[in-house]
Image 1 (cartoon, rainbow, N blue to C red):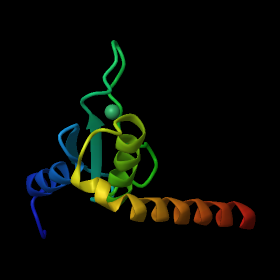
Image 2 (cartoon, protein in one colour; image 1 turned 90 degrees about the horizontal axis):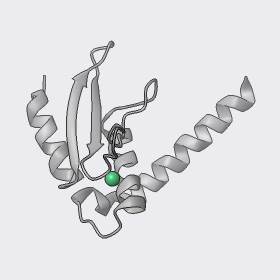
Image 3 (cartoon, rainbow, N blue to C red; image 1 turned 180 degrees about the vertical axis):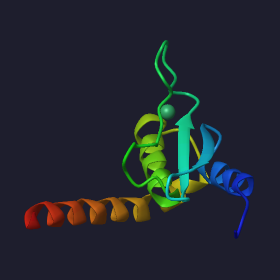
Amino acid sequence: MVASRSARERKAAGQAGPLARVRIEVGAREQFVYKITCVACTGKGDRPWSAYRPGEDNGFMAAMDRWTFHLRERHPGSDAPCLAFLGEAEQRLQERREQRAARSQTT
Ligand SMILES: [Zn+2]
């Protein structure tokens, strides 16, 4: 194993910024599942906003991209290292949408 889970958690939390709470779980296929929740978006009786999507790609990139979009949309005044990669995140989102569209056309 390259880096321990807690080391990955610390690294991801550092990138995600002060509003994020990062937790890593090991999925059914032994892969790392990143769960990023927002400490600011916790409503009464609601669960906190989370970048985790059941059944979807929850690897580092996918989770961090969703988190970056959340920061931009809901906390535009906040600062986090991951916001430096917003352009790349948007490009990846676009690519994922195109892949999904291509798949649905062939089936
Ligand atoms: Zn939030």
